[in-house]
Image 1: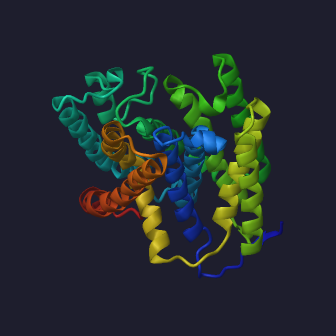
Image 2: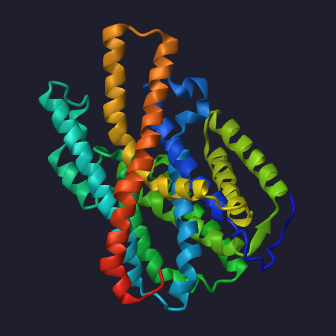
Image 3: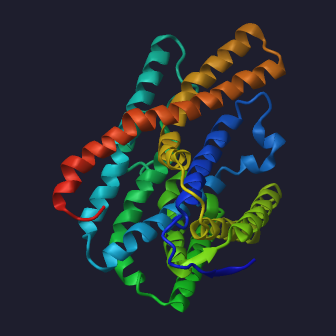
Length: 368
């Protein structure tokens, strides 16, 4: 696979389209993992790698560190944005839409309970858990049982990641490549050691150890961006590398796991990041919409799943649908979640983001 330093060509932007699509695909994997058990046949039985939901979560955490270093590393290093301003912006980017999605889920659970259809696991829908999630502290090890909008524990962990990143990015940005390699190896080694100490694989540590899982992965992504910054990848090399990396993830993700295979999978996911950041594709309206809708899909698919998969279960109970018809109904549930994500992005997430930017960020005159 050939790589070279990118020429200073202004168009198209390296990684612009590919990273947007990648963000949406990661959210889509999380969707399929959570919807998969409700399929006529569990998706993991048909495609074993889909049992490995940790793949998308770990990739999301590395991707977050990678993109944040790419976008904000120079600004923090040059003190064009203060650590406090950076952390405030990131939290205000995540929190409003998170609150809306959580309130929608509360409404769904409340209405279903009033109609005589309470959630199957009441211990996941506690009042204390709701307020922990509302304040984005539920991923800090306060509780041991994930609940409500479960995937958002990563947003809670990212708040801590952002805080530490804001204090360290300026210094890390000036590290040479040797120091960056040592840093990545040391952070990964620390994560594996902590996992061994806990007695569980690092890559999918239980909910109460979310921060121990998230922090190393986030900073591995951030250091990886600095290590590979300025490296360009041809489209031919991109497709070849993506095929090889995808093959490694699918094969190893379908086999019995051990620490060595977990590390190889993380390396393959890191390769996907580097390839996607270095290749140049034309950015279209569709790729930009996919990038923007990825966060909405991450947030809203649990809410839509509570409704659509509940209806799916009632239809199966009442009409004893045949397997082909059930697959169609289940597929419509997936399509509904994806469609709802685009609606949520256009009607909720984007307007809220613009509102916050106009009122709380723009007056500071820091570059976004």
